[in-house]
Image (cartoon, rainbow over all chains, first blue to last red; front, side, top):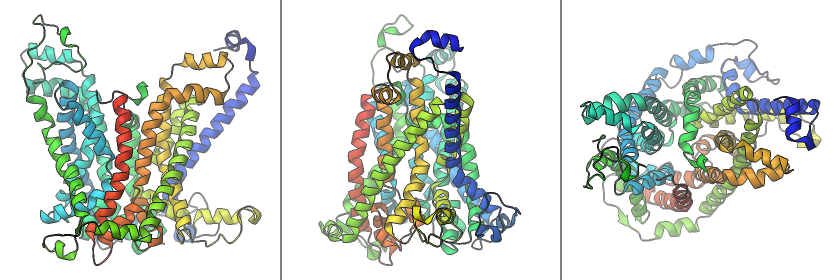
Length: 296
Length: 323
């Protein structure tokens, strides 16, 4: 848009070009400041992880390691933490997250189809239930769930924990997925039916490929829920070789709270996959959380 | 199953075939589809909530953990916690922290959202990508990073405060222990939680701003409205539904904050408890677990949050989210 058209549109307040440029620079400066403040703690974590101890505890901290070292990562990865290999914790976290993802996506897909495709009694009740459940303070459920799992002899097992995570991940997954299911044109399913495809075949050949992107987004969300979870894993798991990564990190931090190099290296290893996943699905995440509120 | 039911939002009269309205007969399909979810939620959420209510009137300790039946104690648990000064300290910490953290989160988040909207396209996605990093960081890691930043040996914040002129911030920062008093502990906790929660507000506000028609802003400008007035008489009313949802979610998240405080301050530091941590430590902390007492505290916290949740559900129903 040229200056002339701008002037024509609002003749009373034509702004000199210099002032406009100053404003632009100011805004971009603010933007950079926000970026730095948001990223700095994570940057500091990674930077500390690569610094030798002499630099970590130096009286004049430097933003980047002058002599980067992999010693802390080596310590974390090769059994320096609590006798059990880092990869055991990693495997536990991964297994838990994958079970959570698979089961909760399946449940969510079924329920989202019901909600987006059918009108039925208690549909609104069901939706309200999903909203309420997302707001329940999960921290307070830890006491009764601990006793229930104890009765079932499932304390200190990964499947017991996975069941709990599935319960936490499903409500939001349905909420997110129903928009994707509703967006699949009804006509496609009707066409498939006319061509003689049964409901099951229609589901696999028409529905599933079209909601796949939504399914990926919800899966990543469920993955992060399970990967980051702390209080239930901390309460339910007793044996060190069953710990997940966050519990391992807390355990290590509690024991040697000033070994900042290895602690930051372990934190980095825990954090990087989540950030990578998160950046992949950020937009859908937001639209899932505030779904529709945008409509105004 | 999928192919015969009337689609949602399709008026019944508009079916393509000439058969007119489909016959209304009870369908079992949708109920089968939601059944697994309903079972999961009932078993993992509603039943435990009922158990909390029951256990808050019971004594559940070591003997019950060995399999003996729980004894009913009437309102004794509630009487005890309401007389416990620790409960009231925890209650005060919970409320004050929520008020301060929610206010800061909303304020900073909204400002960042407005800024993201004003930036050019590339700059905006660059900055929001950075902001996302804060949101994505796992709570455990965030708490540990901030413990390190505010650490007394080698901590960056103390180093920085020490470099600043003494007249401005006072001296003796070099080995100041941020986790020695509740006030300073909660200061660090606030910084950590606000840092993580702002991105959600900012990105939600940005999404809302994108949906406001540009013409409205041009009209406001033509009418000579300044930025302050434009915000309160145009942006705010348009984004009110988003603000409400985001506000309610922030209140709930900040009321029940557990992981970060647990990592930073721990169960030994009873002076700095909030309600979540107090309930947890009563239930699991000591050699003599008092799960009934923990349940009573959890029940208080849940009741407070249910009020907020009711507000949230009302907003969502009004916005047609459950249609």
